[in-house]
Length: 408
Image 1: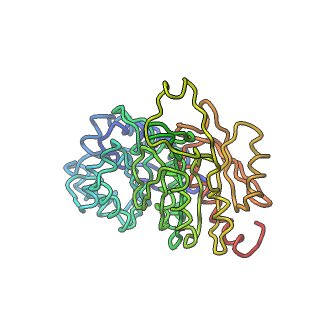
Image 2: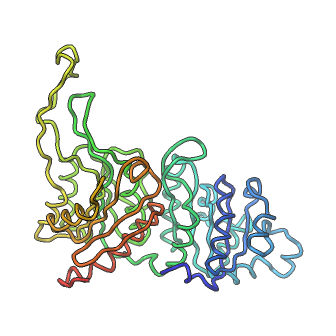
């Protein structure tokens, strides 16, 4: 579904009091470009970051920030606003605001509107990565999900506080795209989705290891998107510094053999397996029990490497196999190499991307080429969460046909 689905929509945008409030101004503009009418309600703390005149100029409507506005409340203005909205979006939704929504509080205009409206409500979290990972926040988010509130994001990346991790507000263009797909909110309900993400590390000795480059962000974004769309989602994660997405069961592993064991133990009861991990193809034949000293090796070190098990191929070879999605990171001949991997490993779908300086690794965005037997689709550069939803859209379209032996 495109942004045109928002044409004529009445979006009530609630702006919470976090540094990401400045992005809400761009969000208003993009919502209006998509055809929506926008009215903005700010929390008192939001006004400390962005002034109401900015939102009034961009939305073309007066901005509300208090239950004690005598002129508006003379006619029960907060109820009027609640009835007016066809969609409520809270962005940014701070940890405090999420907690108050989960508790059913009505101690300011925005929380009161969220209780009083019959319109669908979505929240876009934005906070420090540790606040997002805190069990209290995760419990509050889970409560909102159970009540039917859509949780959009957060993204992972650098934060204003200088830390890195999950907690960034989804980019405005991604939020608009998400709002334009309300029917996709729970389209994976009843599915069991298994995702592997991040690198694998193979120890040389107790101090050193070899491994592949991967931040894990793409795989974590896929797991987060699958859970948000209703799937029972399990994430097998290599060594990464990322918070577990809300509603996702996480299994941490280190080596390729550990990941192989975890994935193969779950794949037979999964509906979809997405192998987004950068699994090392080789491991040292022997692991030293003590740290290897340069003086003992003469300044040079030779390692004998042996092959690791092929997780994707082994999952695809199962008698009771899920829909299998692989990833291919290439530095050249992208489509040729990806198509070969798709056919050689008997995958249902492969997502290929070029890697190198500023591409693929440790970036907040990416571009993907999707290939499947008899088809292809190019996903242009976008945020990884937006790409995750686009990939899941393609899986939703392909999976029924693959089960029936039909070429889509």
